[in-house]
Image (cartoon, helix red, strand yellow):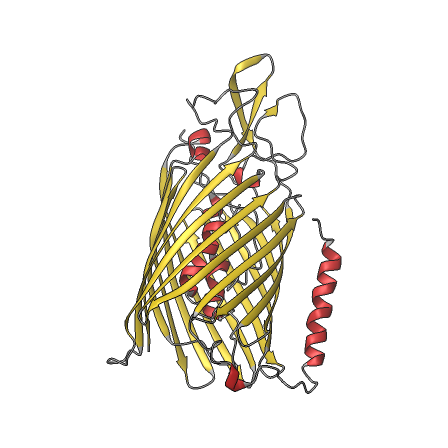
Length: 390
Length: 80
């Protein structure tokens, strides 16, 4: 039987796309509806034996002076021979499709948003409802947003049509933006997320070893807690340089009930080169501790209540360097369009793990028992997109 | 640094309520409308390219354990 391991952490992006549609990028001036625009994005990720690419299309249109509608269509076409896949299964291809729809209603300085997202692949279904309220105050210098999302996922499994395990999810977020001076804007965000249900990957397993038999690993199923609660807080700032450029940065902290703590720091610089050309460079560093139940290799004689081998739960770090170019190919009204741009972005991410070892079948470290070299890989992220406003 | 979750939740709730109550007060904005030209510049946006920003958030959420409080993002991850 060919076992297929799917990286479930790539699958559900429901909540990622919803906020685009809901305009959670808090406006800095008087409350207004989001701009009418359409974006055509091609995205590509390659690294660690995984290649994912596809389109993302966003259409946003206002209806009258108080209502804005948004629709996003997104596809992930996945080809995976990741280290997890090569340890527990076989390379595979898959496609995930997501549709998001939302509506915003503006009244005075308050914006109400309601949205829904539907993400589906052959063994995973995710549905989310999202509501938020945003209000500007203190002469439009301060914007406060409160958001709540309810998610309901169904986890299936190939070759097992009877499997349909649920995951329930709740998100609670508050976001505050503050214009500090005529050149400085600050943002503080806090979000709590709770999940309950089938949180383990149905395809990934753990590896056990017998101290009396050093030449093989024994695969077994993961044992995950049925709940997970996390908190994240972020602080952002951007500064408008006197010669027209932007310096920006962010620090974010995270912890959860699985004993994972994470810290992220990023800085970036945006510089218009010409009237129609802008360049952006950015740098990001992330570090996290490992989950309390993560184990790269488990002694078969040990009894554990919870154990997992998802490398994303290991102590790890990532370093990103990126650059993007934005070319405004017209900025005067033409036909039904007001302006348009073509954009390209490239990011290189270096992932490094402190405990996870590449034990894929046939690898040189498959049965390594001590002083094992830990896993690391680089990933290339590419985006090409066109934006038009009307 | 481990932040007690209950304390953080209470802090955020009190902060939100305080801001809502203060909004009823009359506060003279210290940045006048005619001084906000820089802020109106298209580059002065935390998420100037929402589709691109959201995609990058997805790339990181799928490969790191940290989730939540992203810029331009209001939800969590159902990945497992």
